[in-house]
Length: 253
Image 1 (cartoon, one colour):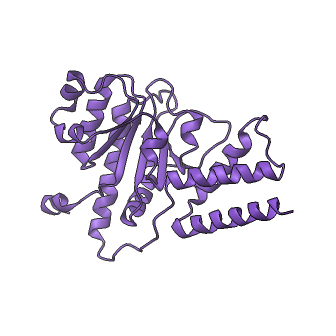
Image 2: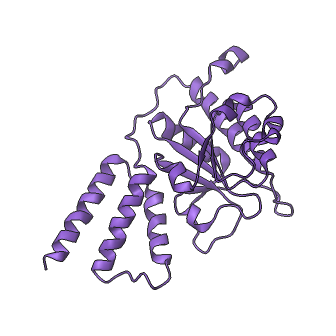
């Protein structure tokens, strides 16, 4: 592909790099710069420190248009409410493992979802501890960047650069294919799935299967199951209908 064709490659607008509780303002600017070099344009910040600031602008090195469009949220649920596909990035071992994919696989899946009209969020946690277990509950899968195990620490902006590079590479491959992408119904959004989980939890309480006073691993495991399946809008409506009717039937006994 020549440079003229390269300029025509467009990464869908509804792919959102989301930085969660970033502590160092410079990392926000450096991440914006990394995004701009690869044509990724949407940046969201969740409870950031030191934004906006001169340090952010300086480290962005000309990515002012990215910073001008930044969306700032108080919490991650609000930041992902309209998203139907959410990927986390994490190097921490978890008690409950989420499905793992590498950056190249992730980029292809993200592009496929975005081309189908699904809003996508890619989450990067705070510099010191990464994403929390509660953050991970919103994720469909986790991106694992294959670093050297003897020195696996990766700068936040460098991690953003790797993912954005893979997105651009996948977009270039898609641009070179003449066959139109297979259409797919958009996935259920985070907001919709949160409503479903509330409905599911209430039903499990009603039938005596779930006790809130006990460890919350049951609901976390159930969320992992449904996030892995990633219901589309039609499947979501079916699930809501089933549990609504099941709840009514249980109360009528």
